[in-house]
Length: 277
Image (cartoon, rainbow, N blue to C red; front, side, top):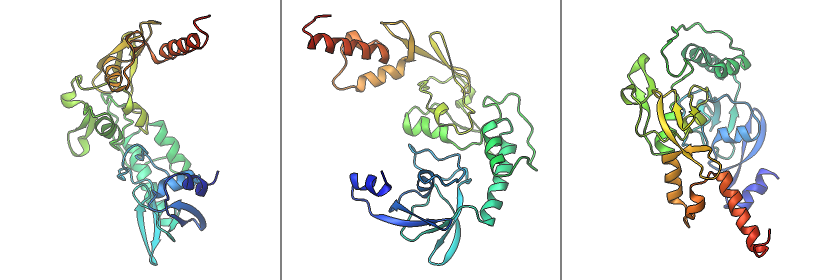
């Protein structure tokens, strides 16, 4: 199915034409330029873009050149909205120069990140002239680039506010307030999911989820009444169940999603067969 066909199925968005590296593509007016490139499989490196959050151009890796009214300028493709006739160059000399310097900086900032090393190598950057001493006490394993995605996910998506930026300048890090175990952490793992460099770590041990990167915060896990498996953070499970409408019956509310599905399916089968097995 073409992009035009998909667009026609939803709201009546105005279709425009954008030229990227000399080739024309269709897009919805005001669509994010980076999302167009991702859809069309045009390589633009990026780290801080997350579809579930408003883009804010923190990593600057997605810089491209655009031509508007005959004027050429450098912009972040994750914060630029497409307009009809927009011309884009993703690999011009200035873009390549800018991107290479950034990769060198990130190699120094996150020297233990295999993600950064692999991405930089794809764009011809394998070493950095910038040096930073490896911190053996860093709870993020010297993999963090301070993009802020984990902080934003915790605040904007989950509403927990369990982590934030600590200190200032070159000493800035991400962690819990006062580097103490957080009582606000839901143990949802959203921070782990959105981290582009695999810096955030968590581990389930028996009846607890340990947020290793966040001062070893321990979050109790809910146990399934049916199979006995620990399946989700207890507080998070309770919050989700409280929002379910209509509410689940008591006999399945305390079961894991897998067992819950089996019980519901079994009841439906028995109802259709008149109770016969």
